[in-house]
Image 1 (cartoon, rainbow, N blue to C red):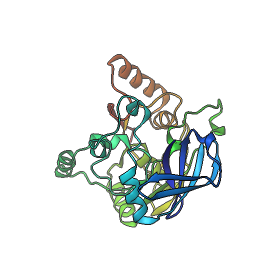
Image 2: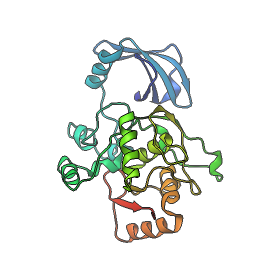
Image 3: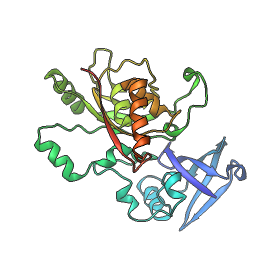
Image 4: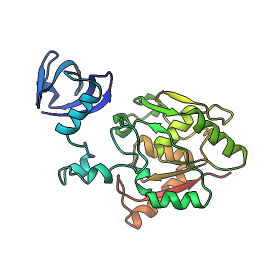
Length: 269
């Protein structure tokens, strides 16, 4: 039995994807070893709600000891997770746990690169978005209005909002590192372009025709067709521009996925 914990719902509760889920029933008790148990509280469409016999930091420590890092399938099918993944598959500026995957655009940044950007006078503001499993679901409907986005938790502090608004007021540009940062900023912004403190779930689904309020530029990896992330970059730069960019990426054999190449997208001022 494989269980991938993807969202915490309480100090002792997690929602998890189960394989094979059909073997589980509400009330079943799962023993993971080292005294860690969990009861199945509910099951629906390959997902279960688990109530553990430990909570808080004690539960977090037990999960870290017993579990392994859930790498993307295209990496995991080639090899087993190892200790290097805890640094390789993580941004250098990550601080909080809660995402099911790394925001891959941030993997391009090293501590040295951040120092060099700061030396050139580029300001840096940290945001939080807990990437959810719904981010990676393909769009299987012809009408995108029928696609249901999963909610993800994001937060923008009052200090972060103030610094971003001040930069904009000076004529500066806001550059989002990754689609997760962009979605958080757009969720925290009002129609007048001001960023406000934010701490809530967001299910924002950005498709062509969306009017961007806060973000002027985007650093992002190359995304798969029919994904919500590809639709977002097409909304940001225009479908034809992204078609030309992806045609070059394919012709030049750029790498896609988590450890792939990135691009800098600059919207017209």
